[in-house]
Length: 497
Image (cartoon, rainbow, N blue to C red):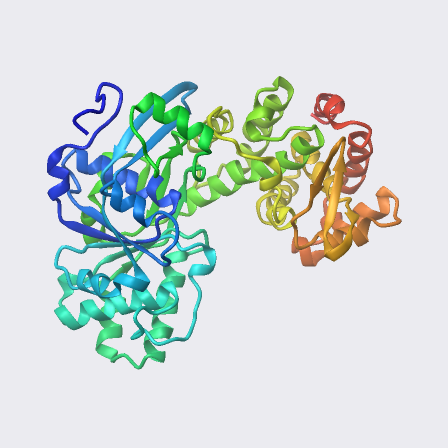
């Protein structure tokens, strides 16, 4: 580090390497390194949190050697837009003190469980990581993440007894609803299965704070070899753990526990860490304005021939579609006692900045995975709210839904796969409703197909034909889009506005 140019790179100071290990983290993924570990690093550099992270890997694969070779250090490059202005920051993150592999170092993990310094446990083990597997927690190591966590808590209880001061803050970041509550319920079932004493179960439930949380930041995977070489030339050093992040970040943590708020002191150094009694506001803004806009835009973008979000946002008419969709159509439907117009406006403007990021390659075809489920969860409720308010069907929402239906007019190929040909491109449709949609479209005219799809309550939870005029308008838009989406988007927006 003494040879690195600190004029444009944010470097850690020497005292950080002597800080105690306060955090146990299950997972080495880029999201954890780009979000929680980023916040901890920034707080440590301001002498606020003053604690480092011990990471547990489930497997021996990938980057353990790189962490060891680089003393846990890695470069975080932050590029994109914030408040309409370009951002370009480079940070050397020193939050991670060491990386342990569960299969080889489980005894060291249990030693850390008995450390008086340990205060926080974080996880991101993918959505399937938070699931119940009835197994012994006395294996070396246990197989599932919940069993590993229960083993850690049991070890801590054995060492400190029912000491109320030794409970920890547990923050899962897996993208499942009420992740903290779910994890806690699984640990209770596992504790009974393992015949752990009632006194321990009482301590686990009352002295440890299992927090629901929501994380939001685009952190692409490993840089390509070409991009890595370019960045290392600029930096003047090699880094096998380098990551790229967008400027936007959000970590919403649900807790009203005073001890938890004091423990998570890194929240004081960054306003995008929210420790609040209820995170539903952030869930709703993200689900409707970010995820909902992605889903409404996705089919239309693919029909127009765009490969990435970045490409679409470079085009005036599509950028206008996205802005109109968010600011004029979705935002007004969200204003309520719990969400103010200002909060929704700020969030929407941040989403526009994020979509415009030139440094991140976010492919529309990846966004289209499980398209039907996403439309049902993210977008259909907006049509229902709009209908309840007795408003005209919004133009961009109509276009987005119509484009989704047209995208799902697929061709069946062997091995149960379904594809959609658009221009010269063949897209494989990765959607568990693809076969159902194929049968709805096969051999039918547009009116019959759309009417049948809208009536399927197993997909939408309601009969969407009950929304006055929706079917007729969708049929009309689909037939126009089928003649060429790109040339007709602007025309359709004007017609239905």
